[in-house]
Length: 239
Image (tube, rainbow, N blue to C red; front, side, top):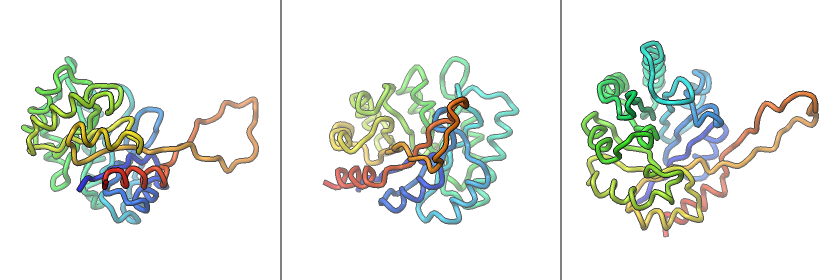
């Protein structure tokens, strides 16, 4: 049976994901940056109220995934906090200056996280050799890899994703993500033979504020998970 993970950029989206039938939530903050670690208040309250698996992203800032020792210390503190509140896992990743996976630090992260499981996020798609990175992450002890197949979107990366699933051979989960919608999920499932999929399935939320000062720049759009879209994706996966 296929598993759907929802990337939730706020607590409301996490609850929508559960209601719609998703199996797991990757909880993030800051959609414009592609996701950074949520606040401890968000993490704690979401964990208290959410019944499905929760994998917060551990990412101290936007940008690349080359971190200094202070940033790594921040990540360690965030990982230990997630562990202390009972999260099932985390989503994270670190790389070297040459773009390859920083295997030594990934091993340390996995040790800090235990008994939580670890998904390597899309830092994987920033590495120069997908097949080498796959073997390295297996060696580190990662549970799964979130990837678009080194392409702008998972549907565009279908061919490589299929090869990654074949090479993984059950040793690690390959989870296609990026650009996954109800309209393409079935073709992606059939083309890759993957069993887990990742999507934000997000839509723009309507602001409850009726007045906006035209002289002040908007603070940014707010997105929430689309319950009906999630249900449609799950329905396609179950066909």
